[in-house]
Length: 82
Image (tube, rainbow, N blue to C red; front, side):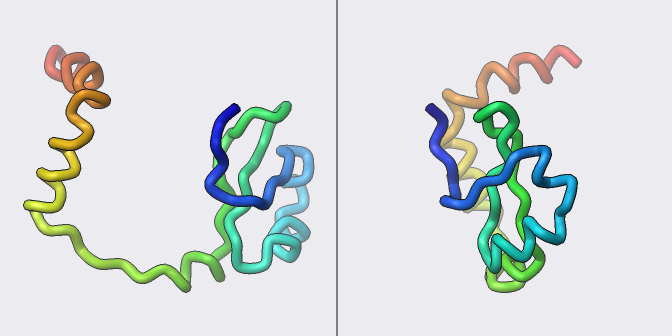
């Protein structure tokens, strides 16, 4: 089973009424499920407003890429030929 990044969930059917999902979510993201499979996350604006952002330096980006190199290498190989 996939690990969800939030403890609130809703189905695609429930998302037909997004206002209701937002009200129930409060300030938390909601995992959207389709037949118990994660489709994505619905994040209310109130949740985003609480997040503080800090620009990444070039060194930060290079370090993150270095750490994920094994995982992203197949994608890099594919894109090299395009």
